[in-house]
Image (cartoon, rainbow, N blue to C red):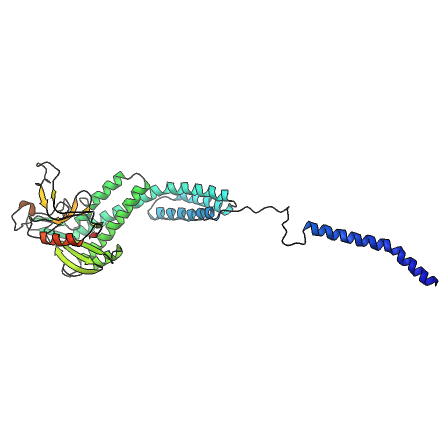
Length: 369
């Protein structure tokens, strides 16, 4: 009995301690739950917030950085000094790598835009100058070994003069002299690339022995290059003094022409019909004392292919067309204005002009090479 009484007393003596422990445990659990440490979805209010970045601004900065490097590469390819621009690029690249906020990327983008704007002008100007030299040198070199001897006046002419100083070369120089901003030089670059491509086609065609009234590979190559294979195209070969008309890549008509004389060449390039007039009257626009004067001339079918008065049109005063008629010669018509090439227009007979006039529309391509 004494032992049982002792045990009961011992149990009673531990009850307050156990109760305290239980209460403390519950209190700790409650604090833990309130703190959210055990909740994976709860955000710790003391954590540093991660800044949001506008993806568009970031991508623009990254893209402009690549663009800047491309301009530096182009400048280097054209022989320009890139030291200053490369240093700017390295600095911009580091800034992009360190950017963490939208404001950071916007600041880098603004700086990159300024650097790209500055490098464009010297790069495009140098590229234009190099392309101009390339065309001039090739025309001069090729002309020395490809000539036309004219029995009429015992004069030897360099072929390809349409690309030289009296032709496209002179127009390029004028454009270069007038260019002031990147857009101006960009246009010169694009024009020179076109002239150089047609120049290469002309040289290739000079070795083509196919008759003028058959398909020439150079024609097809140019039509494809200018993405006109599914359209109507008028092709003029300056070396052959011939015109070939294509419709969706198929040759539909061939005819002989007379193009510009050496001091007034027809313009090689990829043009289009800018306007049609039937009939019309051509006026010289210079006094009668000027060597380029001619009387007011009625024209039945005129198709302008370039501004400043360059047309494909009938020349009823001529009898002969074809090779050599762009140089001084004797024409069976006896008309003194038939004894040499045109002033830059592409002359064809009245019957052929009527057909071409009905075939073409505004914006129909005219490729001259």
